[in-house]
Image 1 (cartoon, rainbow, N blue to C red):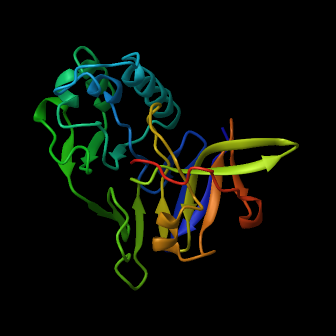
Image 2: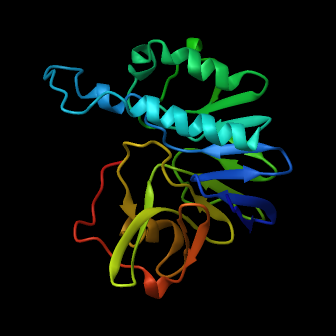
Image 3: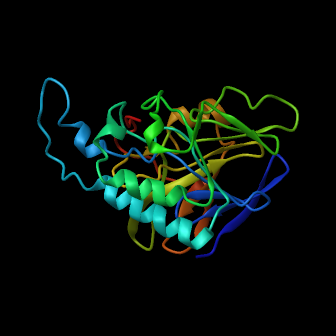
Length: 239
């Protein structure tokens, strides 16, 4: 796996092809929007119909396990919407033990999100609505500003994806979007939708033409020029 080193508000970070951020000075691994137990959430409530196989949590945790084994972080930070709804942690069943095993020997921080504003103690780790690390503000939803000065912001929530046309075919994959002081991380969960980086939702934070896009490849992260980006026909996505 070939990471892509970049600087955000003067802080050295790396973009991992798995869709995570690595802070080498802290050995900290940052992932966003796991949306665990999303499939089972469709069988909850008045209409108990679920047309999705309930294996998304297993697949997402497998990917996270492989990433943690490769990186061996001292700290893991999950940037909110780690669970698809408030009841998600209680539907984990035996998979709670897998999360406990991932937390062994390292610090673990759950940042709360709009899907999981409260998290129970039995999933382990610490819980906060944001954290400051090396002058970087880590939270779920991007703020309107990064706080001014030399501060930076790392957030999730928008599930960015990039679409390009190359060699006669269209490719649409998860992506990081950033400028000098703000980074929005792609969703890590296997069952999450994605919002095209050309959607007006991103212009709110970066302005028109002000963002840089890094698309996830199989084994590396690719910088994509603005001229190569293509919009989706349906430019809306629910996050």
